[in-house]
Length: 227
Image (cartoon, rainbow, N blue to C red; front, top):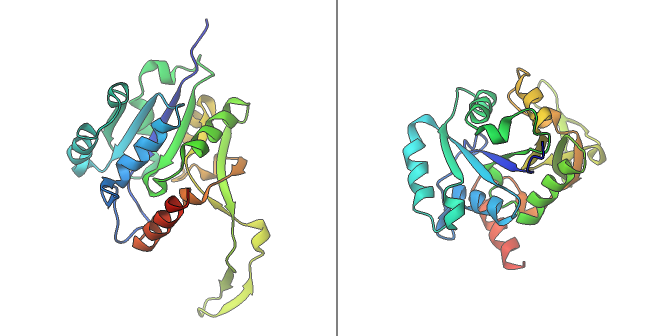
């Protein structure tokens, strides 16, 4: 059977490391959620986006996406579902919500991207690169950047001790890419993150930095101004 290659992106929207921002925070007149979804479709390689919303905000998220000025075909390719009690259960619910054409085990050409709204400005070229690398035969792919700060341990008293060898450290970004089989395997593990399973590294992008506060948005603004 000749199956068509398809890519589905699952967007996690709970910004667990943020104390002041959420998925509907506005930047340049549009929410972080919309920036994330638009970037996925701008990559020209994503067929379906599944947005995992907090249970109490599903209608708000749907309203934001329904009112967005999106391409007519794109508008029909975004699904919003309520999340679970933690990240891994939410991802399982998202997988269960996929149409059969995106989840049938026989279709080995399916690529699944796990994206986080905290990385809303991941550029289309990065998204395309992750997808392409999975299609080249790497079942788990993660974009990373070298860590440039000096990192140190602290002891039980809160005292700085030895420095961590930063040449061995990487900052992890999203989207992370999975073959269908790899994603199914990762969901079977009792873990709250899929990062452990993303084994093939590719270069990340400064625009895909994790957004946790307003200072990060200032950095995004500066990077966009020079693109």
